[in-house]
Length: 328
Length: 202
Image (cartoon, rainbow over all chains, first blue to last red; front, side, top):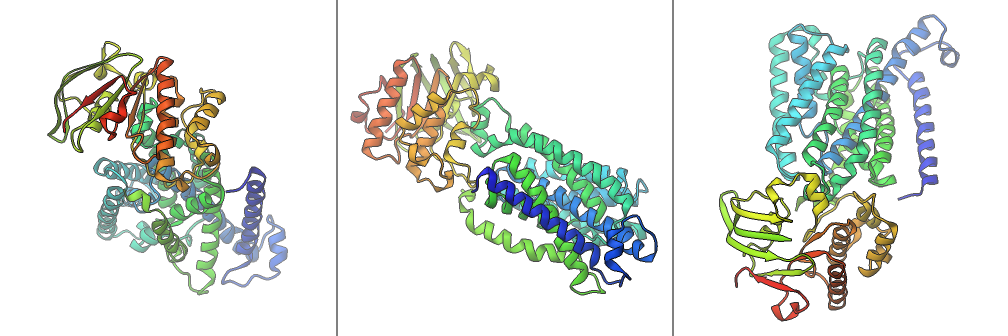
């Protein structure tokens, strides 16, 4: 672990890295832009080059940063709330619940993708799925097994809903299970930005009270706090963050798992710095993944979930190998 | 301090402690001994309000434990668990301070000295041995100024010198008015420093 000064330098380095990635994200893409650097240097210009760089690529970059931040914060809160290193919202059913909420909202004609009502529907789905998982499971192993079962069940049901609903605007099953930034636009950013920023700050403020959970439920009760209540409030923030993310770009694997583990490795487990670090690293990882997704096989685009799985799955395996103590 | 009458407790329909009665005086040290499975830790959990009482009564300061809110519990007792597994690398001092914002630095320094934790304070909790973890648990249980301290197997992984130091610490704390209930596998003849020994069965 490092001192405060080293942490600040690291944070600054990551922020500079994100700024460079943002420029790269503006510059890279399958379409050729005339006078590329001039277009990048003048955000308020006009013309076909501007439309590609600032009208299509820029909102996509912002969406990746915001969703990455949401996933990082949600993952940090989920791991701390459950005192389990495996509590990825995608593993414990939260993301699948959000998908089903969003799919129902669209098929039942309540809302469109990327709007506030669909984010609300997804948040409710996420919260219900979390409650189901938590009411059945006791302890780390059960949490993961129950979560996988809940996830599979809800993913299957949302697949059915989408197929039977047969609506072009309901997006594809692969959108909801692997995620995609291909259809992001500025309208979507206007929904994502306030929700993600407010929920992240609120979750950050709240996270301090969850440091106690590392002591175990019994000790938390002896300190006069109700551990179930501490967890439930955390899952409201988590569900909002996952709800708004999934309803905009589908369910993206492993970022929520990887970002907090990388952050904890770098700066330690205390919740407030952990949440900030996870937000920044989640944003950077997802932006990097999205740039890779649209450049590796250009002009074809890879599903973002493929890239994040490539990065995230090895991290999951390392975490599993290093945290045997949890299985007791 | 504690009145236990005809206590029946257990888990999932299985009775572990069946009809237990005892009185524990304020400012005393009570050791609970007995074979594995005799219900020592279950009894401790019942006193701490962690499990539901099937029948009978536990009164702490003349009030039924069933009527204690979480806030009441936190002002009445603390408990050092037998074992604990951590996966997040909080430092040892962070773990000892968690939930203890109102405790003085002097108290923290005293306990880390008495429990020989000084050299580990900045190390990650995940790097400690079983005996060291146990001493961290004991330190935590003595941080808050509560009248009743429950210790579950505090000597299990300690060497003789540590057992002696912990024993002396407990006696000093008792002399300042605290009540201790200790579950232990120690032999009866090694527990002469306790004020009362309760044997739950051989």
